[in-house]
Length: 358
Image 1 (tube, rainbow, N blue to C red):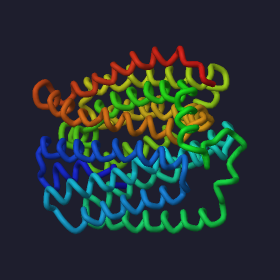
Image 2: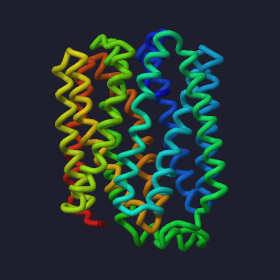
Image 3: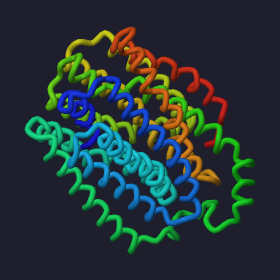
Image 4: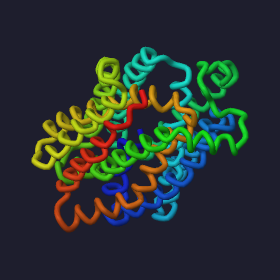
């Protein structure tokens, strides 16, 4: 829910300039990048459920600060904390499910779970039209419920029920370092995926702001756009499994990155909210086709938590420059030109074809 309204909230409701918004995302990006990698390494040695719970608590604290204050510095800290918790959660959760599920189960998981998020952006956009504060309160309560559910899951599903694969649990750090050196694909492939994510992230950084301020879409239409994204994410899982079973996980990852890279620049020519939503849906479909093959490959690597966190942490650290790059292009060239950056994804995607780690 936070993603749906945070940029309109900062730009329209609080009246922050594009430079102030860029600074907020710049600082939050630095914090996320440093801590995501650190926690990814810790997750190979400590209880992942505990780290997941802490990440949700961090997000809730950030939302609480957003509710209580409109001061720029406090909002900056609040957004950083909220997004830190969210971004730490993603790689940890992917490894947890990846170690427990077969490829077929992963496909089912990534098909069903996005469907629960269809109504969330719609509700968030609808509530935010009346009150951003109420929207944040609802998100705050929802995360508390999720934390309670995690405590229940932690008590009944021990990590020892993972599938029998090579893990790094309870091994000396020297041996862990040796595994990192031996499993080179566990480092190189995540780095290429991280570069792709950085480029996409820079290109998409201000999509909500662009949609509401340039395209003049309403908050409800923004909610509709984000809701349709969840449908695309759900459909992508079965499609990516079908393709990866025939072409391989890495080939599927590379191919779908290239397709997404040539789809999003079409937004440059769009002025209609409806067509914008349609192109964004197609692009989201291609991007979301990474879920099954990525989790299937990375979770089976010897340093799974590190490799998965490497994607998020490196892309996040690279993204320190994203607000600066996007801001410069937005101000000095045109807001629409930012979307053309996604074409650069083609380069690292082509390089991925040589790493056959399936």
